[in-house]
Image (cartoon, rainbow, N blue to C red; front, side, top):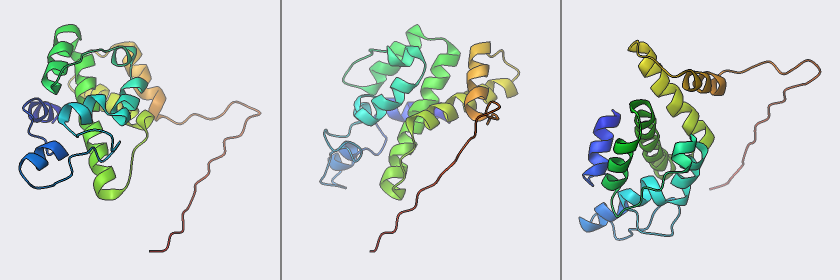
Length: 170
């Protein structure tokens, strides 16, 4: 799934506002997330402040990556040259989830927290490699399991959950 998504992103065929504007589907080409710049694939997946928030929560390599270029293809090519297979798989999964997060905001009004997005991506890639009986680095396996499993609080501590509701009239 990630390979197909990356292929579409690298070939500039995702339905961004810029691509839809070029086909006269929409007049507005501004990013629906940050509303500051034209929404190209490079912007949506790499340079948008919301995408940067996600990359900054990921592993240290994602935080320190400075692959810049006018296209997302150049970012992907830079990462392919310098990262191992597991890191690149996480990158691909996170990029797809950033795109899905953008779509959820546009179509459903939901915007997933960057930490949760990263946790889901790490867990998905780890489980994929485990199912294929591939070796998963211990730190990745621990990171995937630590983020997703609830643990009892220490003795003398209490865990409190709360939820919020909004009452809007339309």
